[in-house]
Image (cartoon, rainbow, N blue to C red; front, side):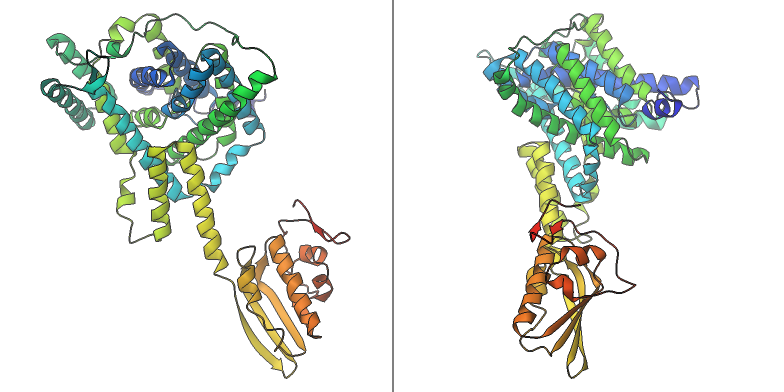
Length: 528
């Protein structure tokens, strides 16, 4: 491996200053993230219908590998709710071993996505979709915390806490949030969330305040994850079962990871890393599947905690994973005493910091279509899932763009003499604007010679080429002469009948059409 490649993969591994203070900040940020990861991993394991250690192992392994090799320092990965809600169907129908196999295949798919650099398609995600994404995820994080205000009754059902316990719980949550808000005003030496968790935990343990603790969710005690080949038949039938799930897992994982990557990049003013993130996520899930983990992806909540706690390098993410393993192996008893109220308070502060509040004040500054997309993506994220929300948002945004572009086609015309008329086409010519393009001309009443100038237009696709061909036929039927000016060299070769009408010029534009056209067969092909 060359020095350049190594530097690219491991950039941001350690603080550049090398000062003891920066190392301490990174490690303490990792500790804070690890504490916040525990109840999340346990809760997501329960949602997926697997043992809590399956989620904790995933948080450790995915977190460690992506922190070391991922696309951007500061991003935290682990078991996520977006994947857990999809995994439950596979676990219920076929068991946890099929889940492990599907996680391995999920990782392979993600590696393939990285090899083919598919992560770069995230550039097509509009800003309005990003705003809807962060708003929806903030609401999801908030709603997920509400389950901590419930307890099991005698029948085993989840019910809201009794008023006294609820009041204590809410009070401790608010206290944690106040501490997190006020700590930076006093000192920035220790991450504010860690101070909040520590002080509230000490108060609850010393005063023996009766509120739910991490241990009430499940025991997190366990051993080091062991290598384990999924116990499933290695045949086509198994592949038919797991492949659809793996494809969905891979899509959800990459979308959430790459959007989180972009969000952290905006906060740190960094760009790139999407391909490396795909490869790292894929490798992490392959390893996780062979070590009894449920797989995972980037986590926006924990990533926000990390960055805002001062975790700017890979050391913070690596530290978080190592601390998590230490909790499992040696410190489960202590971690299980931490009150859930403290962790809920941390996550509520994440919600406040994650939600794009400016999206509520831009109604008069942006088109109504952008506002609709923000609301749509937010709603679908909350009521369905993140991947579908982003896909829907991108499709709607693309349709809006196509519609607006279709309305931009227009022309000006002038008579040069009694027998010659010149049309100057303005705007893009593509599938959405061909109807408007055809309506610009009047072959029946135009003079004997008509010239169409495309200098201020651009021919974009097969539909545009066909529209030009059809127009040429209409003028031919009227026994009139049509000339086409300022079309690219691609158009010269791709147009059949109308190609004979093009007037060559030194200032013809240079661009490629999005399709191939076989002049001999008259068939449009796959594209450049």
